[in-house]
Image 1: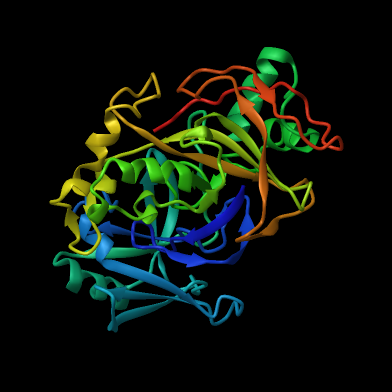
Image 2 (image 1 turned 180 degrees about the vertical axis):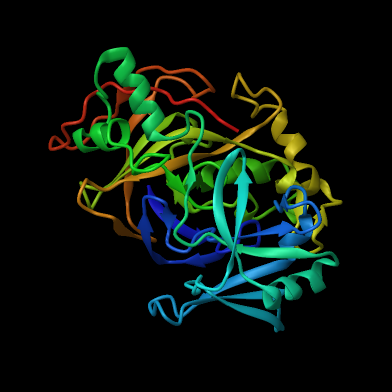
Length: 362
């Protein structure tokens, strides 16, 4: 298998931007979901499922290798003449600090100010605020994080057998701030990374007329893989290893439950009126495979980077080959833990053959 696409979403729920090579940290791809929009009247977080017009805004990161110049260019309705440029590293010295909570995970953020608020307000037709996360983080809640998995394993077995030694202490014992050293996330919903496969996407489009297929971008992945043995094989994956780098793993803890955002027609900014606008219902027929969330179909898997105790970042590249190094015995489900089985791999990998299934928080 190999990475075939990488996506960054600088502003939550707006369209993302595709990259071929990018810096990756424990909190996600660099610049991913650093901004979000809220409706001013009630401070409601703006998510694509409730605000489908957000799909009309596209994003492009400019000058990504120059920290002082890097910006996100936001275009409205794909119109290059109707755009807004936002620094990805704005000074927060004079910005108003505000409290924000997403999925019961609170943090502080900065209001970017009237210039940016007004641009979005004019296009949405109601007042909105653009918020910047800055150096703040959100805690990963529930049983999604490796910390929760490691702590549960420690309670059950007295050690975190399936995590590397550094992670057993870093995730499970030495907490840095409210969420632990490796538990901070940005404005992403549940985890730093979301992974999907082209093989599963093929099954989705097989449910639709050939002239009404949908793009994988509607599932808003950070990482797209090609080469899985079958569609939805990833439901059972617990860990991926990057072939060329033995120190780089992706720990997969949770399946992603889907909502009506995948029904949105990105060209219209509203729920689709063709069969593809009913894709959520089509997936509900046989993809409601999380026993604790019986009304939500599963597509994709949440992940966390394991790159050793010394590194704070690495780089992901389209074309890099990966392999499944650990699998769960059955699909993960909220509140359930179980042992995993190792997939035969390089003899230099000394990881235990035992793991556990993490639970789903939504």
